[in-house]
Length: 60
Ligand code: FES
Image 1 (cartoon, rainbow, N blue to C red):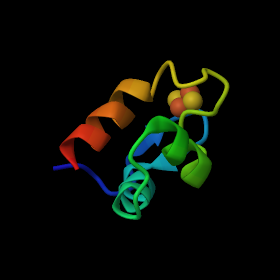
Image 2: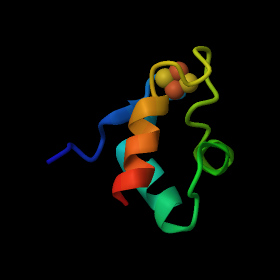
Image 3: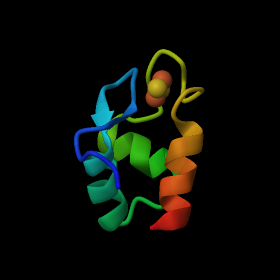
Image 4: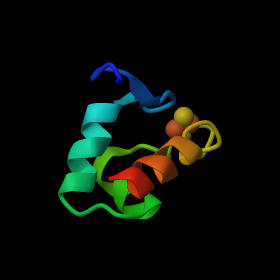
């Protein structure tokens, strides 16, 4: 069980809940999640969050 305010993307401070909502609305790849939430588009360019985002897409 995850905390709803857990930050998936630390650079852009994007929460797991925000990403889950974007996925529920049809964001099914990193580019769409990035456009919808900013996740993966921070200073590390997804180095720290990309794997978590892939897993969230896979597990949806
Ligand atoms: S942690 Fe997501 S872009 Fe750096």
